[in-house]
Length: 413
Ligand code: DP6
Image 1 (cartoon, rainbow, N blue to C red):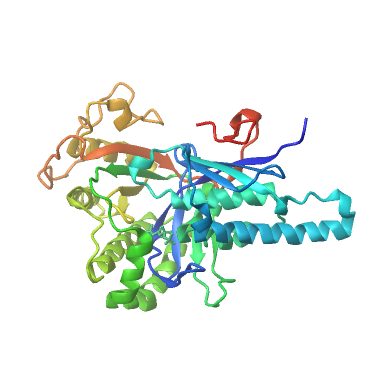
Image 2: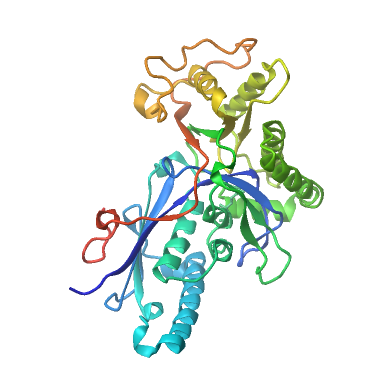
């Protein structure tokens, strides 16, 4: 039987607490400000990619969630990732040829590829999948090609697929250093702290129902760069200070500082969207009611300490960061004000078994919570609540049954 050259790996989703919004170079994907994110656990959210290289493949093919993308030739971002990883593989092959002899080297850089990628979360959820997807593509390629390269170096390639993808190359708490060079060689992701540095920090994701598709991040952020004067203030005066303070907050596990900066930065990101001309709106009435609910929840603390922080990306879904002890109270609040449709298990699967024998949405509210602060929304306004923790970076998956390509190298689904 002929040998199959194939690798499968998974990569995580990351949610920024200091937002990336704006490019100074749209081809190399170089940002106008640094950003910082938390990597979420792959147990609940990940992209999985299988890549096979073969001299028999007539062309490179890609399947995304079971559907073949027939336009990959025209996809510049994808082609940039292929070109960069192939170039590194070629260099590596030349080195091996010199060190070990010509017949010892497999010319994988010359083979076409079959690639299959899937997410374990519904695409309809509207969660950004480009970050985990591109991180997974680049990471799996690096493993298939056995590239002797660090995660930071790899992040510079993933960045050229989608900016936020560079941060999904690491677990834990991750900064994307904006860099200043024109060639992008210093614009990379770095780990600020590993996953287990702050085990109490957890995340709740509220999937908010959204009928219309909004402006994409790529398009929206360039409109902001071209028209918003507030963005210039953010880039020059706000983000540099916040980055420093956020890194300190993470190192000191200071939730008060972490939560304050997270909410302020989400607010400012949506403010620069409003300052874009014409304006961009990502938050809807449900998103704004979640902000009110969390603000009221934070005011119930007798010492006026923040207990939870909301953040929103380029869509209406809310991500709430909090510490373990507050999770049941917050889930109960979400379920009370934003009840799900009747399929209870799908609404909240309770992965950590926190509500065994109890009904969510019917537990007592926190002491001092003003229950008139927002109305109870129609069922299904929040479609799903996901509960997850901080997670690790990309991982190789072993085991024949784990691959996503069949014997002929075609997507199973
Ligand atoms: C609001 O990384 O999706 O989620 O680089 O054009 O692919 P491109 O944009 P993308 O933008 C993400 C923007 C954000 C904030 C963030 O994740 O930092």
